[in-house]
Length: 199
Image 1: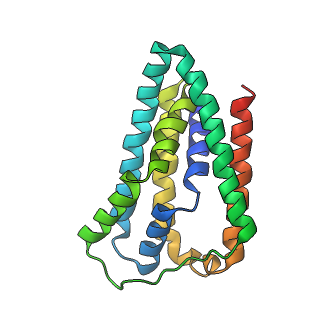
Image 2 (image 1 turned 60 degrees about the vertical axis):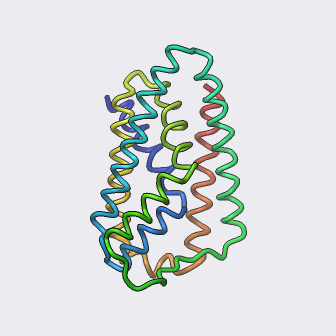
């Protein structure tokens, strides 16, 4: 079980660390201390639904159409190389900072609607959860444990991010922090891509 759970946890955590609109929104809500629990819960549940669909659906599809797993593996590797390049470029260029400013107060309804849009209307979310995690889960004998690990990482990350945001505020006000994080994400993405290509 752990041989599938831990890789699922690690890969999901690596993917979710990527700087994006959803994470920035959670950080801002955490810094403002507004609706943090509900924002984190919606993020975690959304990811759980998408990861479950990827792991269950991809597994069934891979069994029905054996060549599809190979296509998705190479497609996933290409996506990871491209995604790593975007992060590497961002790390090289620098200039990113966390801007927690904006409208002072959002109602819970407004916050959730905004978050649902950032989550479900973002094509990268589907690539990361349904396609990438789903395709990689097929490499493990216990896809259920892999998926449970991926969901655990996602839920843990969002709650840690939301409630720990007040501690990260000063750190991510510095552009160098974003550059380091982007660089680490790029290297990790390329490492996972290499592993997929060498299977």
